[in-house]
Image 1 (cartoon, helix red, strand yellow):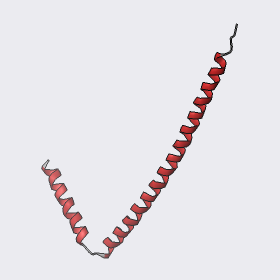
Image 2 (cartoon, helix red, strand yellow):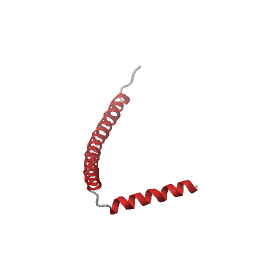
Image 3 (cartoon, one colour):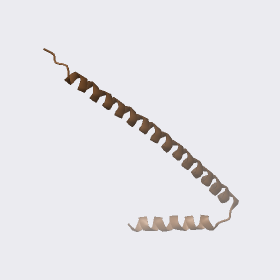
Image 4 (cartoon, helix red, strand yellow):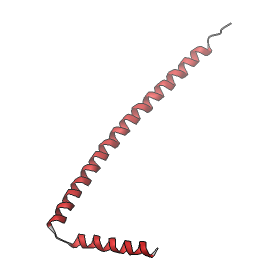
Length: 82
């Protein structure tokens, strides 16, 4: 437990150092990460929209098939096979 706490303290110190540091390399990394995060979010939004569209199509298709099956059963109930 003490080792985990010490590890957390060290990570916190490093993060604080990096946040305060104005090193050009760190600035490049921050800029790259920001662009990457933005691109990932944009891609995720696009994928979510596509999934929602496809899910709607599947639901509509299933509803249509269920409706057709129900109508078909109704017609078959009127037929008497002897």
